[in-house]
Length: 157
Image (cartoon, rainbow, N blue to C red; front, side, top):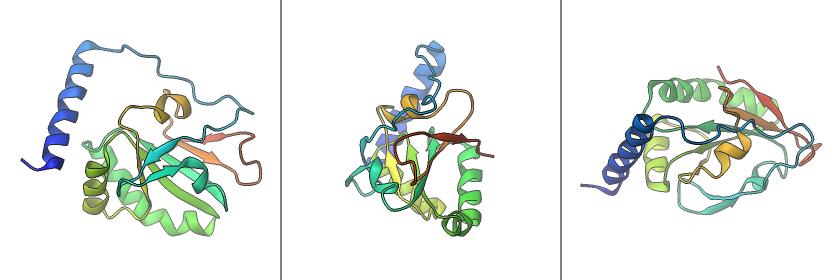
């Protein structure tokens, strides 16, 4: 069994165990207005450690939080991202995905779906509860001008 297959099997088991057990953790409410965005260090799809601040240092960042790599909505989001990617760049945004997987799975998923931006890995759910909202919102916009002094959440699709 390959590393990616082993990671996928482990992720499926964790998901099924969590689904079977039911809700056990606070879904969070995202960052309050005026709060500083956390500058977390996360591995990217190549395994290199990256700081979130790298993505909003020179321009505004669009962080897209993807919960996992196995659903149809993720495939649709990948299609939409490929179609809209240049529009985001033209608007001055630096898109980056934060996903709940390991670098090997992130690299495989990124290649399979032709994702044009980096995929940061959050397998321990460090970034997801603190930044993303539990109310169905899955993206956060970090304006460059205000840097750490506020976050506007945007709804994805």
